[in-house]
Length: 223
Image 1 (tube, rainbow, N blue to C red):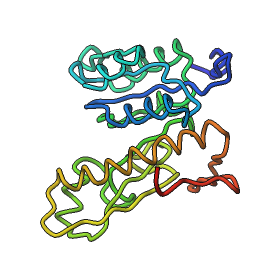
Image 2 (image 1 turned 180 degrees about the vertical axis):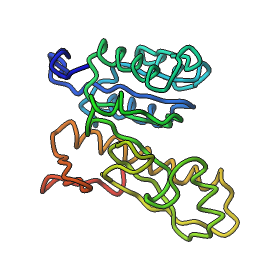
Image 3 (image 1 turned 90 degrees about the vertical axis):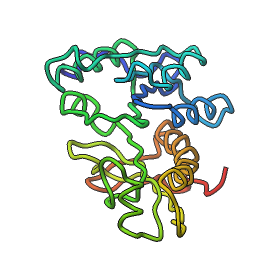
Image 4 (image 1 turned 180 degrees about the horizontal axis):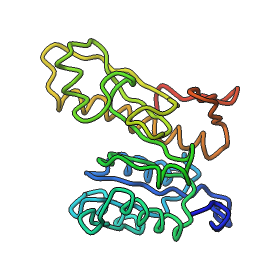
């Protein structure tokens, strides 16, 4: 759909409208909702969409009275057709920025083109290391001493787009996937609302592979 056919994506009150795509428990969604509640994030979660009927993210959304939608991928003939259905919902809810928060599907050009530089993904490794599934397992099997998380804008390659922010965590001898995951997840919860706030304030600028953060703006190391 050509962008000129879209309604204004800015809410009347000027608050950033987020569309969150999630497939699992939705802990990063929770971090967004809590940051909004604290006044740390000037945004509104306009809709949460999941490809999993039992995703806890949908329950979390409902608890905050956020529209929560399950779209069954099996009802669509292709990834593009599925993303077209998602796009229609994003249009209906006037979403300005998409957040992929534990969304376990590759998004297609159908979604990426209308939201060019307006889709942010969070990945549990220090990209470009360990893209794709099972990033924690990959890190442990490789024997790295440091891992972490990456927030980046989404392009048509998997876990590849321009990097906004990263946080490192140590990998300890004897770590399990679960232990490393929890350590990284704490950093995801810290970073994600801050990055979204920078976007809401217009302090992020994408130029090629690089994301520039406006001078004077920064990401805090601690809450």
